[in-house]
Amino acid sequence: MATTRTVHTADTVHLADTADTADTARTVHTVIDSPYGPLTLVATGAILSGLYMHEQRHRPPEESFGAEDPGPFTETVRQLTAYFDGELTAFDVPLTLNGTPFQRQVWERLLRIPYGETRSYGELAEDLGKPGASRAVGLANGKNPISIIVPCHRVIGSTGSLTGYGGGLSRKQQLLSFEGAPAAGGGVVTDGLW
Image (cartoon, one colour):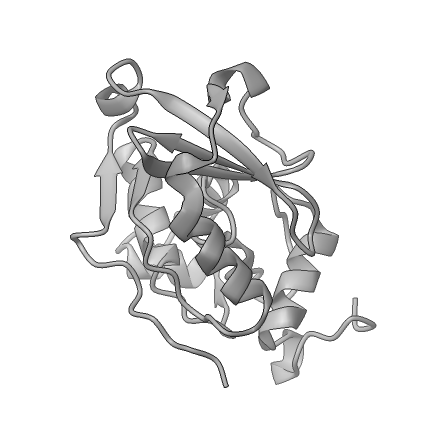
C-alpha cells in the first residue's frame, strides 16, 4: 500500500525570484539513477532547486549546477526512491522554485495535482483565473525546474492527448502509466496505449 504524504505546505515550498538565490547561496548537485534514466538534483543553499532528466529540454548548462556534493539530497533521494518503489504518492521536501511570478503560480498549481490524476493546460489556466492563457501555462510548465516532484508530467492536452514534456513524451507516458493516470477517453495510460 502506498504511503501518502502531505503535499507541500507554505512552510516547505519557498517560491523565490531568480534573483533571490542566484548569487547569495552555494549551489551543489548530485546525479542519481532512476527507472527513467539519470536524474540531476540541484540544491541552492541546501534546498532543492532543480531536478533534471538526462537530455531534458530547458536543462541549464552543467556548469551552473555547482560542485558535486550529495550531502543536501539525503531526504530527496529517500523520497524519490519510495516514489519509484510505489510507496510514496506525494513529496514533502523543501523546494526553491526560481522563475517569474507567473511561472511560480503555474508550478504551485502543479503541486496540487494529486498522484494518478491529470489536468489539462486549459484547466490550469482557468484555475489561475486566466482562461485564455493555456499556451502560457504550457510554456511555464515546460520550464519547470523540478520535474517529477513538481509534477508537470500530469498536465495533458484538452483531449487527453500527451502534448509536450521537457523530459520527452515517452517519459511522460511512462510516468503517467506508472501512476495509473487517466488517459484520453477516461481510460488509464498503459505502456501499449501510445
